[in-house]
Image (cartoon, rainbow, N blue to C red; front, side):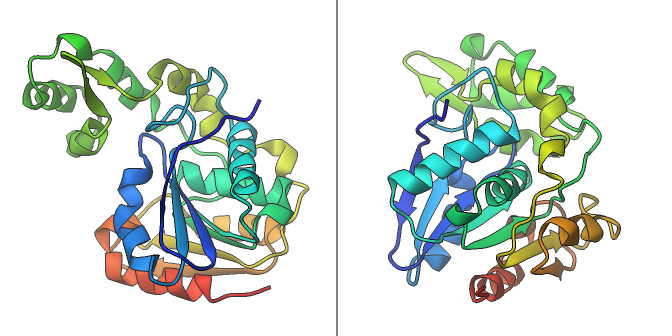
Length: 259
């Protein structure tokens, strides 16, 4: 059953719906939303089990695509551009392939419609190993989290999900459901491999990222025939945060595309 997702809404004009990546939230995209708001209505969405959106035990790309389709219908958005980063990018692709009438323009950020090795279980386990309710301070929690992570530099990003509730801290992520869903989140739904979305599709990816290989471009073209790619040099997986001006330039080019 589709969930009613939380979202931040800003600006006026043709609609843009932005979907964050795993462990992220709508807040990660506020600066992009502000940059677009003078000419677009921008909805930054919290996907299920993230941010202030509802939790659910199930969490695969078809579930999340249906959540977003329901939001688009509820908000009466006409042919929105749907922008998705990482997990949000796979969700956006699943939406375009299952409900092409819901998407006018598709922008995928640093992810491909292919399977990946499990990069996430260690992060879920690190967060679950910390008793957030008993944490003395955010500083202490971040220190202990960094000690448990494969990449300690990601601790500040993950710490955005530690919130104060009454007199204690808590994770606002549904870590149990995310942990159980990592296998499906690491792949791409095989049921969609025979589908096609014929609307404009753009990939914006980091030249220093290992998430999109040269061979993955053909995977895009088989599903999204009206496809073009933009490479942002000197950017890793977090393209929009690492090279914001170059990212916005590529995004504006993608937004200008029409079927």
